[in-house]
Length: 191
Image (cartoon, one colour):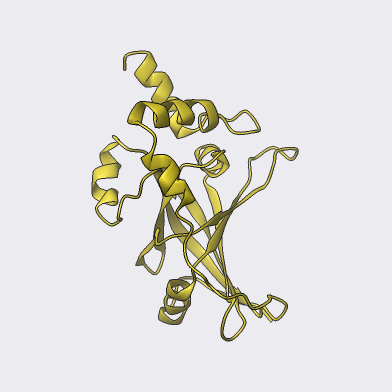
C-alpha cells in the first residue's frame, strides 16, 4: 500500500500544510538508547524546496531530537490525516540543529515567526518521502492551539529560560550533550 518518492511533490506539500500536528522521530546510534517521538504543534514547519524543510523548535522538558541529530543526523517526520481522506506521510532525511547566535540562525530565523520559548531550528534535507494508507487512523477534530507553552515562556526572563535549557535541554536522557549544552558550556568557559 505504501509508495516511495525521492522528494516532496506538490500534492505532498498541500497535504502537509493542512495538518495541525506532526511528529518527529529520532534515535541514538546505540542499540540500547531511547527512540524518541515528539509531537509538534503551531505554525512552525517550513518547506523550502522538495528536499529541504525546517521547523522552529520550542522549549520542552527534553531535547532528544537535538542530541540525536548532533550524534548521527537521522530524522523522520510523520504527518497523519485526522480529517478528510486517510493518509500517512513520512519524510526521511538527515538534519542539523541551528541555535540562536549561530551564523545560520539569522538567515534561517527570518522564515519563522519566532514564538516565545523558541530554542532552536531543526533543519533537514529530505532523501525519501513515503505515503501509506492511514486507514486505521481515527478522525479527530481540531479545536485550536494550546497557548500554555507560550504563556509559560513569556512569564520567564531570558536568564530563567537559559537556566531551564541548562537543566533540562543540555543533555539527552542517554547522556548525549546537545548543541544547546555545547553552547552553554562554551559560554561558561568564556568562548
